[in-house]
Length: 115
Image 1 (cartoon, rainbow, N blue to C red):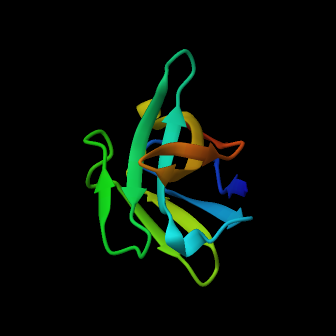
Image 2 (image 1 turned 90 degrees about the vertical axis):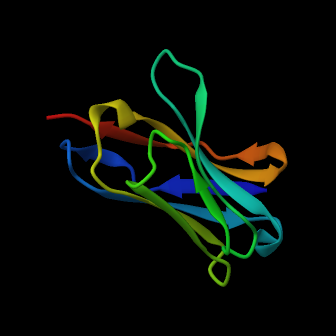
């Protein structure tokens, strides 16, 4: 199993970023997926989740209305569109393969929101 996140960077408050996660080594279309983040000095925080066919999504209250999770099963890729970014969104963002709980995750991509 390999999960490779990309798309992170530094952005000003109010800006946008789109994260991608390229998946390989398993049947991507068969698994629910999530985005999880970890800010410096804090524990992991679940951010968004999507079911295997993309028909159902859920978001943490902290990102509701600002972040959108999606997937392209033909491209084995998971996405996270992040709008109206805030300094408190600064974290290392991971994509995760789910089987109820997280069973695999990638190396992460850093998102820094700062003026």
